Image (tube, rainbow over all chains, first blue to last red):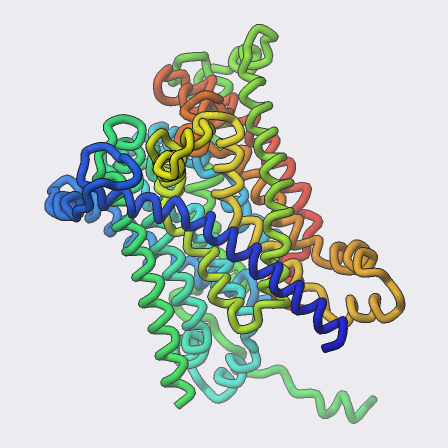
Length: 269
Length: 307
């Protein structure tokens, strides 16, 4: 083995070790939550003396938590539908068309991402109040959209950059209508980007806390409830529901990845 | 020349007509029409609230008379030397600066690995780093409380091994900083990956072939070429950390009051919206100034894919 190859191997090994260590640190607290949800007692003591799935059963049975889950799901679903529709066209404006306002538009779209969410949530609280709107999970849809639409726009735009506009033009020349071109050419090519955009929208809304906190009014989402209980009134339901929520998000991501793989394979076949 | 002109196609009789529904918008270009929904959303959900905050910051303290009164009292209160709110600003900006510096060092090797070394594992490693974004930050931060707390995972394990137990690090400023580095890692990592993938491999190789040392090739070729991505990452993490509040509340146990916490207190407990708005305006000026200065220098088409 020549020295250059040896050096590359060493670099790869060290980088992999560092990456592995950082990943371990990233998932350690998630693991701690899972451990805390499996203890028997009312308070968390480690090492765990009695294991039980009691708190899981109690959390699943709780009516209050059922309501939280419904609110979170409705919110995430509504945000996903609107964000994908707006983000799809937003991405075309971002990367497909060469129009005079494009450079400015690209930067304006990024602004909500470069803005601290708690401050945005408070600003929206104040604004909704100033125009006399009743706060509920419906107002939170608007709040979530403000920062999720730019993210979805970027996710889809990255796909649009690799898209050849000549394909659309060829379809037009062959006599296809605007709607046909959209349905038969543009959408099929951009599907992978749209799916990842939808997955991002759903999961980011599902896990969002700072925007929900100030804009849901009397309604409460899962992250909000968890936070309230962390600050005052810890019960093992906190790590239990947190772990459940994490598992749900991981499953959604896994199913999304699996669907993408199957679709790719079917297209290749 | 003449034949060229003869062969030039005659203006088409059947120029593509706009679809009937979009006739009202026909004066806009296709790109502008596509941008319209996003612009509408940002006008209602982003620009309008910020205008409302600015307007509220000039209202009479402790009132809700927005647009009815005009006073600089709120700003005078903040800049009053007796007021210690500048401490919150200092904590927030200090945390943000340290977070950016630490994250640059933590994320760079990982990004380098994802771009150059991990090969077919890059995708999986990328997903593993994205996934935490989908778990609410307070859940992840609370996991650290369970880890570091008395009789928690660390303390309990060390006691079981027969030592005096873990260190008392919870509810300290260092812990808050750790929480911010932890929370914002993906926001530094992915822009850095974008930046590093802008660097053509052969340019670095060429520098090495011409006798540059590895350090020289890194400092004078790789780093400048990757800078746009690194800049985005640093800006993003700075801005988000400067406005962060969950870390200070969950891991800091309110031992340190950061600026967003002050704003929140003004909005909620003390019901002084004008003062909270004035604080928010000052924070927005710092963040907005930095963001606009950096964004105006970046060419997003080059960074995101259109060469």
